[in-house]
Length: 424
Image (cartoon, rainbow, N blue to C red; front, top):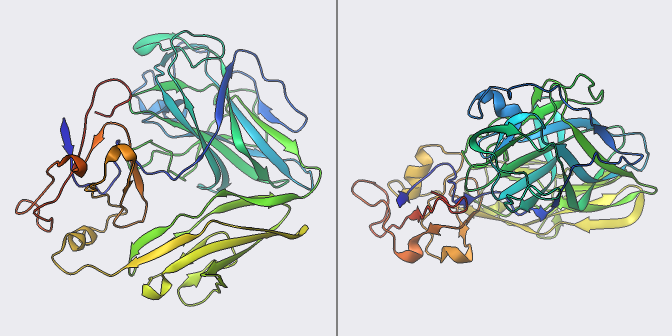
């Protein structure tokens, strides 16, 4: 066992992504049949005798592999001219058929629909799809494990991620999709595409860049890195025959922040054609001015917060084409914490100017998945399998070696079992 004490970044045993709806994943050897509004690039990349980079550990594989240690892999595309927009129901990718590395235990895929602007990505919707390990190599199962050192033909299969809640897209607009994957054990498989000679004219392949927190590389990263060519992909779209009522794809998250920080609420709603936004605090409309900006957009920012900014925030969305069609987000609570006194634990944390900080000293039973508190950014986490914390009386960092910690401070440790499920 090893002890995990104080971090300013997330650990493998801590999931910090917000709750996402559950998509489904399905596999087939057959080329997908296209609908009239679908966007696709189904031409295979040129076969080659070696994978990009020559070794799965090489950085050259950053734009082809789905893996814990790789960016999410994506593709931009442009919607058609249907005035009422479209609903996106599914995204398909393909594994290479040429020789490659593949190690595929249990995987949780993370699928996002994004709005690219230059090198920045705004996440509009996200869902996850869990796929269990399967070594039978059946036509509708997970990819076969070649192993970490085997260099064998890939399956060439298509994997389709079907959204639990279809995503509404506007006409004549550039969007993107990307897929990342995480598991507690290592895994990787190589996506087809990138070096296609028959390119999709309306977009390009991209990856997200490597996230800085060493957990689920790329999943929280919103930087677009263009790649040559295109993925082998299908974006399944249905043209809307009438204006689409607004609904929330991502709800706002509650925040607990120290005074002086900036609070940002960024839910995402979709509908067609044009949505109108209004934030409310404790039921009263918010107006721009002072430390408030974005009151009539989908992103509300409160700078240099004080106790007076605390409260319950909701976003009201209406549809310009559907009179009386109104939807209100779930409430997000802002808690403003007084600045810590000099010499306290929190004071020492803030003195290092971290982006986020999980103390990992919660005393609740981790098997019940209690929240792990972020002292800085308000990004709550959830303890995953194999985590033991203060509930089990694990001794954490304490004075005098660690000034500012309490003499009864607890910690978290993991129980690595080398089973691709429990963290090590």
